[in-house]
Image (cartoon, rainbow, N blue to C red):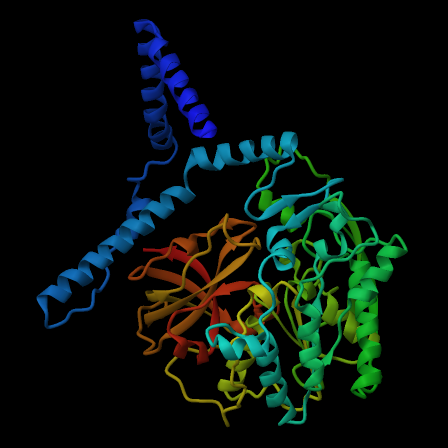
Length: 547
């Protein structure tokens, strides 16, 4: 009763104060007009810099074929749905091109980070200039890893152990051994940079991780966990992770590659090779990917760039290392293997985990790598190769599957069938030899979604197009269709390809995908909804002209 009386008295007191508040008419008018001015200033400023009614912004309303049915009610609903989709896409485009948002957001974030040490929904600001990826922290603090027993009682959840066991069994049936390599995350090894509650000797882990590892080992699945290797480096005061990036340092990665090579020689009887691979040292100065996620004002740097020395791997002809599809070892990896391998990530090229594993083994290895989604992306790429009849597993003795530990709670662990189709299938889709490029005119029949620069993790992104009505430079019909990959975002800047819409007529230069697969194939990519098109031979496209 005392609490209720106290609350009631406070409410009465507040009402009395409001009733006694007096604002002069002149001040009231000023406040009202300032408020109205602020409301109208936002669209007015946007109109001055980029009108939403400009031709290129209205291209999104290009007429599209809407499926017709016998029911007039369904036809109206289909057209209404199409109209709503166009309006939604237009609003999204306006958000992405908003001058005020693009100008004010970095400035506001810089103030928050500089004064209050506050990050955003992706980046967490730690101590001493250390930055952390929010999803890495969530791996330690949120959901436990789904076990096989839990999966039985809740079929809606996919068990990593069950998926890995299925993949291992498929490989075992072909005489191939699987090695699982979960890579530890920065907050796992550096919790003291997040909170004073931890010391330099502390190490964190998801509560179900050791149960997960025990499940794999009970099924005779080999696991290579580099956590203790990295922890030992940290105890020796060696830097294991980059301060402003989600990934490890070159020294840590090379140390792990050497240990992995010894693991292969000892546990799966991989023989050391006789090929010669050398190193080329290169110094890199760069800001990390978490720094980029903060979207700070570039003119007000709060975190200095980091300097590292990488060692690019060269073959005996002094050429940069390339994966070999005929090798006995296949490496499946995510951004932890790509960071010093994929030049677009900004930390050099051909100096990654797969390259250094090849160096330590002194033999070629095959590699399929894709940034992010390490639980499924590389398996899907391998499955696509198998469905095309190319049998990427032919002649393999070992498959190494590397993925970030966060995938154990946040990844897609759907089992995939790795059966190989005998012989390559005939197709009506255009293919090109490696030595040929072709300039064509075509219609965009379908396209995958474009990335949102503020929502995706990495700075470069590829989209897929389905092109029809192909004609050559003279206008002669080619009687072919084409599946084309194009760069939609470079350094977090959308390219003209990102704004292409269904029904657009374009002039495009096409090249063999094989010429670009090693670089652009490792970028994150949005595929078309039609899964049958994934079995077609893709081409690489460069947009020349939009009608």
